[in-house]
Length: 114
Image (cartoon, rainbow, N blue to C red; front, top):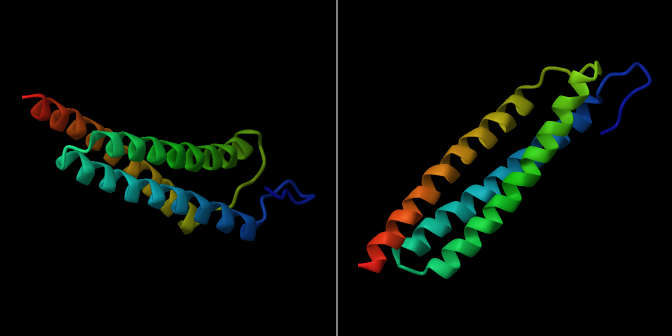
């Protein structure tokens, strides 16, 4: 992240960071829904691989978000951005979907055992 000499975050860079969070969260969402689709067809190997891919994307999105928030905690002014707020909301929503889909896949695995 580029920091100006006046200790503020560059607005254009914040927009880029926001898009990175949205991109990784969106990729994770796509992998999660493919995973639950695979599990519904009892293809748990693919489902587990897709869960891992989704987790990797969510980890990256969370890392980028956290780095940005840490700047503000260090006293560096981060401007308000509707786009960054949307990115955080998207990340949080996909994280919740991840938790639910993981539980649904566990259920499919139990059904598949019977």
